Each structure stands twice: as structure tokens, then as C-alpha cells.
Amino acid sequence: MTRHIRHAAAFTLLLILALLVNAARIQVFQSAEYDDNPANRRTSIARYAQPRGDILVGGKPITGSKDTGQQLRFERTYKNGPLYAPVTGHASQTYGTTFLEDAEDAALSGADPMLAPLPLWNDLTRTQPPGGEVHTTIEPSVQQAAYAALGGKPGAVAALDPVTGRVLALVSTPSYDPGVLSGNGAAVARRWKRLNASPIKPMLNRAIRQTYPPGSAFKVVTAAAALESGVVKDIDAPTESPDPYTLPGTSTELTNAVDGCANASLRYAVVWSCNTVLANLGDRVGLRGMVRAAEGFGFNDRGLAIPSRVSPSNFDTVMDRAQLALSAIGQYDTTATPLQMAMVSAAVANGGELKAPHLVERVSSRRGTTVSTVHPRSLGRPFGQRTALLLREMMVGAVEEGTGGNAAIPGAIVGGKTGTAQHGIGNSGLPYAWFVSWAQPRNSGRPAVAVAVVVEEAAADRSDISGGGSAAPIARAVMEAALTHTG
Image 1 (tube, rainbow, N blue to C red):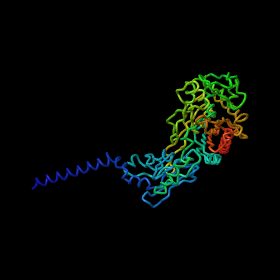
Image 2 (image 1 turned 180 degrees about the vertical axis):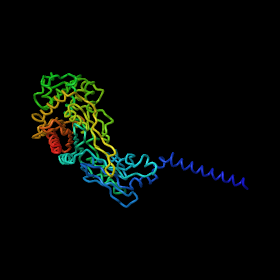
Image 3 (image 1 turned 120 degrees about the vertical axis):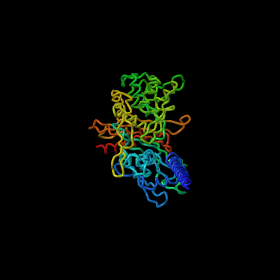
């Protein structure tokens, strides 16, 4: 009998061990597989069982959470949703997350280990602390000024602090209210379908996800390349540029919209936006020098994030001379996001040093304890201080006596560059209006803001489209708000 009891006990122990091994296999080695299984709703239920952390602008939350009493309990809410949609993105129970809601999801949902009271706390308890708070760099008055100045026209504004890289404004219009996508069910599905089908593309973040031909706004980059390469040593000397200018290796003639560009100086060419001069200089700098200059400003960077991912701006690395000449004036295949062009302006304003743009200042716990901070970071020097001083002179001239007069602000030093970018087959599409600029108080040695504005102007008459006429007044409103804030 004793022998049978021992056998039964041993067999029972073996079954218990097998059960423990199987439980360990499921809970440790296969837990991720079960967590990610679409049929497992526990993850979703847990994710929405507590309020989501908030995104803050100017120290105040622009998001919230609503208790629905449903199985997926808390839904995201937004204050001034259309104004801040390019910053926040959406957090939808059905369609996931975008922009800051996505890039900072771990902190906002409470999954970030930095929010846990003890190391490995989340893994051991299978719970999450309350969602953290994401403090943005956006200045409310600058954001509101940009949104109001665009007036709903298809376009975008990006504004940076040139010295730190802080993103002061990020606006895209037409916009939408991300709160309409927060929940689930048939109504949310209908809104999603309607927003995606809209011809005005309200969910497109034109400031960081749409690239446009920059047109003459790109001439700032070409001017920097000409100075850094030594092709131009004196910005007031003739450049030996004919008008019209025949593109190298072709019979195609490039002309200007203004007079006086024949053999004009670099200063005159920037102030009055001479196509022929800058195309000629781009060809003389050469492909390698132009690529080096463009990439120094951030073109072709596929890793740029603020922390939301930014679509890469393009400057081709393989071209013939005619294509290079056109690229040097922002045509051919050259494209840029508004954020990229704000970076160009910021580097000029900041003496040649380009700071990494960033949208998040810090992340804190719900109780206000800082768990991470973003510090200013340099992306390098696309050009030296002498070149920066000369570029600043020429951009100031463009505002004070040239094509950018609509951006002038009393009591401030303002530099700018207009751009009218043609596109479409045979340039048949309505041009995009660009303006890139920077401003600083006359009694300060520190620039306050760098701005890029693009206006698609889909409904405008072709003759009415120009960077100076359509985009410069918007840039002025944004710069005025930034100057008031810093003052």
C-alpha cells in the first residue's frame, strides 16, 4: 500500500510541475503573443480603464478624458481641437494614435517605466501608474496668431526659436477636431470615412508631413552655398549672370519676373529674387557643393522627428547641370516641408548654427514630478558666422527694400525671403506662395523667432499669388506675436 501511495504522490507532483511549467510558458514566454492577439480585449480594456495623461500648452492642458461608463471606459477629449490638431494628433479607440499622441503614447498611457514608483513595477504588478503629462514648447499666442492669419486657406506655418530649436507654432489648415474620432462605433466610422474622403484633406499635417517645391525661398540655401564655396566673395560684385540665362546643355531660357537681374550682384539677386543669378550660381557651385549645403540645413534627413516623425525634404544627389540650376532656385525635384524651411531661416538668424527642432519641453508624472527633459541640441553649422551675417543683411534688405516689404514690423529687425513655387505639368498648377523669415527686437542681440509660411492658394487668381503678397502678411502676424511674447 505504501508503495502505491508513493507512486500516486510522485505522479501528482509530476502533474503539478507540468502545470507550473505550462503556466510559466504561457505567462512568461507566450504572454506577448496572447497580449497581441486581436481576440484578446483585456489589453484594450486595461488601456482605457484610466484617464489618459494630458498634453499641455503654456502650462495648461489642451486635452482631457471623458468617463463613458462603457467597457472601454475613458475617451480622449480636446480643447480647441482644430487649433492644436497638428500638434496633438488624435487618440482614437478605433483608429489608434498620431503625432504627439503617438510619439508620447508610453508616457500618456502610463506605460513608460519612468513613471513607475519602483523599477520593474509595471512588469511585476501587470498594472500601470496614472498617465504622465507632456509639456510642449508651443506658445499659445503664436499658435493662435498663425491659425487666425491663415484664415482656413490650405497651407501651413512652422515657427521656431532659432537659439533653442523650440517649436513655437505648428499650424496646418484646413484642420479638424480630433475629438470626433476618440470613441468607437458607427458614428466614429462615418466621421473617419468623411474626413479621409474630403478633398481639402483636413487630417493632413501640412506643416511636417507635406512637402512642397520651395521655389525662390530656397535661394537662401543657394546663396549660402555660393558664399561658403567661395564662388561669391563680395555680395555687391557682379556675378556674370546673363538675362535670360540658358540652362546648361539645353536651349531653354530662364527669365526673371523683375528687371535689373542681368549681371546683378548676389545682394540684388536675393533682395529682388533673380532666378537667373541664383541658377547660374548653383551651377557654378556644382552638385557636390549644393548637396552639401542643402543637407547641412536638413534636406534628405530621413530620421528627423520632433518627436513626431517629419517627412524628409528632398534635394536630389544625382542631376545634370540644367537640373541642378533649376534645383538651385527651388524647382525641378526640390521639395521641402514648412518645418524644414523654418530651419533654414533659423540657421541664418542663429549665426549659422542649426538647432534641432523639438516640440516637447519635458514629461512629468500626474503629480508634477519631472521624469524627463529635452535639452537644446545642435545639428551642426551649415555655414560660418561671416556667411550668416551676409545672409542676414540680404534677407533684411529683401524686407526693407525688396519683395518682402509686407513682413516689415516697426521696432524690429526682420529678414525674409519670398517664394512663388510653380508646379504641375508645364507649370500649369497654381503656384504655392512661400515666405521664410526671422525677427528680433532692435534692442536685443537675440533672434526671437524664425518662421516659414506656405499658402496653397487653390482658389486664387494666378496673378494674385506671390510669397510677398499672400504669405508675408501671415509671417508678420506670427512674428509680431512672438516678439510680444518675448518682449
